[in-house]
Length: 464
Image (cartoon, rainbow, N blue to C red; front, side, top):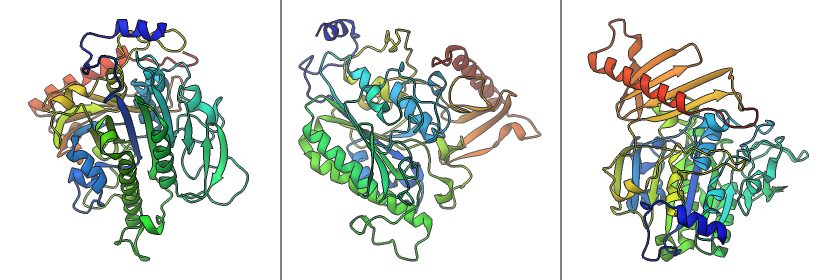
């Protein structure tokens, strides 16, 4: 109670308030994360003529705000670390895939979404359900890592479906996979997308407002599979190729998201901020022409890092609108902080050191979708995970019109003019005729933006 009083006393004056300053109405937050889902695979975005039907995600957009220029990292682990902490990947040391065998995990000193809402003047409940992917099977806290990072419970896959730690039980599939229940591993044969939804329905039904629930689906990430019959679209046949199966997994996930919303009911949904996004773009193997399969997941082309993000709920003033503002995965943290009435200006890490936040709240954009919150977005990829120096690194600064990419320490630069947000144009720096005046001026601005990030952002984890 004393902590709550102190936090309430330091909350910023500009934090939006409901009629009841410490009431719970409208404070619930449901974060839904899809794995390897590009904007080309969500029909609401209209970026591919053959996108799989996603009626429930589309309906979410109809009552919320669809963000056209949302950015994540080219690898899911970095995105999950950034949205969980509100900090750039290099601060936390997670810029590459967290393999099941990796010893590195999101450092416990980092303040996560669950630990953030614990600072609220209200008493929040928290749950993490589905894929975690922020600790390895051989990291210090392994399967119990979500609990050490503040969540009351975690139920779901520690990493990818194919990952195996238990004794030989055959190939891991969506209907035979390893599930962690609060740190204890067991095999399950429930279809993974359904299992995660079942857990979300059960947990939300038992939680008192306000609550934070993170629901992270493994779908449509490999292994490619045919969903169970009741979640199988009519257009999937025995002769369907792997792209069709990938799209079917998206359809099945959309159906299960619809079931989750139906179980919650309209009254609870009206009091819940729902944030839907993907951790990176679609897997290149399953990108349909005319889009470029080489400009997909793991790359810094638009198909790899420009991801779907839709937000609906009580903070939205103009349902069914689109925002062209540049937003990022790191912005979820500041958004939740504002909903929970927690001031992010003077946050401390669990070790007592300063905890600067890189993200910005999305609430102003939910009130006015025509507003902006930043001039550029920044994303990166580096390996291995942990402290620098890194064997390889890629940094990306992107504006509404241009993208600047620097590879490794050798300053190998690329400059792209973004074409329609579905692809990048040719590398302008490879043109033997040089840059047009506008592009040259933008290049200098982007170089300055990158230096700003580099001067203000450094690794803060173990060994720093």
